[in-house]
Amino acid sequence: MKVNSQVFRAYDIRGIVNEELSDELVKKLGKAIGTLLRRNNSDALNVCRDGRLSSPHISELFTEGVLSTGCNVYNLDLGPTPLLYFSTFKTSIRNGVMITGSHNPKNYNGFKIVVNQKPLSGESITEIKNLIENEDFICGEGKEQKTPLLENYQTEIKSKINLKRTLKIVLDCGNGAGGLVAPKLFKDLGIELIELYGEVDGNFPNHHPDPSNPENLKDLIVKVRENKAHLGIALDGDADRLGVVDNKGNIIFPDQYMSLIADQILKNNSGRKIVFDVKCSSRLKESISKSKGVPIMTRTGHSFIKEEILKQNAILGGEMSGHIFFNDDWYGFDDGIYSALRLIEIIAQSEDSSAEMFSKFPQLFTTPEINLHTTDERKFEIIKKLKKEFEFNDYEKVLIDGIRIENEESWGLARASNTSPSLVFRFEGESKEALKKIIAVFQKALFTIDDKLEIKLN
Ligand SMILES: [Zn+2]
Image (cartoon, rainbow, N blue to C red; front, side, top):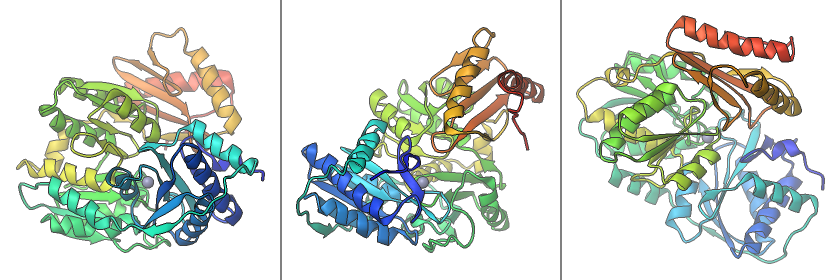
């Protein structure tokens, strides 16, 4: 079987249902993963699915494939992605597959794969692809068993969170799988909850379940202001990412709320490492150092961050996209629900408003992520040429993911997207002028490479 290599990405498997993700491919994916596990002396897998319309069908076909290799399936049923990760720590089965399209449009679906409590590496994803192409599958007869874990997940989070005062919080689950757990959990913890779009609905009738796009935070902002809430929280479609709005209705980006979280955690853990991706503000790096932590910058991608946390034994990790990983009193996986409650716990410890607390970590002049459409082949070629263009300039260079150049007053990043045929840019400066200057440096270099390449600012 020839498979579309677009479906097999840097760290997960994803595509349009029925087109890229055909029934045949889904079933063979089950066979391939079952085969991979059995050849690695493992014979069981936890499977969970999000609330997308296509997820029950995909889960069934995938499970059929896995069982046909003699690998057993423990079915967690409907739940958020963190529940799947949780299951690999709380049951004897350390492997898991989450069927989720995360924050993608409703016609998408995909697979997040965990083997031995770790995200599947790019190498293993290629191996799965090869198994499918060669139809190289083991035969056997596995058994399926229901494994409800939602209660345990909620109970454990409840036992770990302690809120010093009652806060009024607006929570927008975006009709994603987080709605199954988060609203109840928030109320049980004594939060005065104003709920938005808590029903799980794969049609996503209200807005797209992606809190990294400010467009999707509009309703949350209105509700926070209307109700004079202390904080607004938004989860993505599978609740592994977190969006935050302060009491005034300002969007607080992940690199800013991470500074606050890092500062709190480091109070009792000075000298510990904190991992974040190349898209984050230089202010985050500075504030981690100032709070007596060790900042570690890494590649973008939730799997890369998780790997780095393990490798460095970091206490916290986070990504500009809103994946936050607590590794002090949690298991080092990205969990939007748990992370939201940890942030709420920090806010509740102070009499200050959330806006006041975040303002201790002010943002510089910054651009959002800017995408420049190209092709999958060209994106790498352009990055290579950019590195050459920048070789002899005076900026400090960071080459862990594309190229990031920095000086005292600004930084700029260009990298190849992991998930789409595009280049991703981000810029930041101490002043408007510094911001303009760094963008111009990149624009000039791009122009030298190809005069049609243009960074378009909104
Ligand atoms: Zn997600």
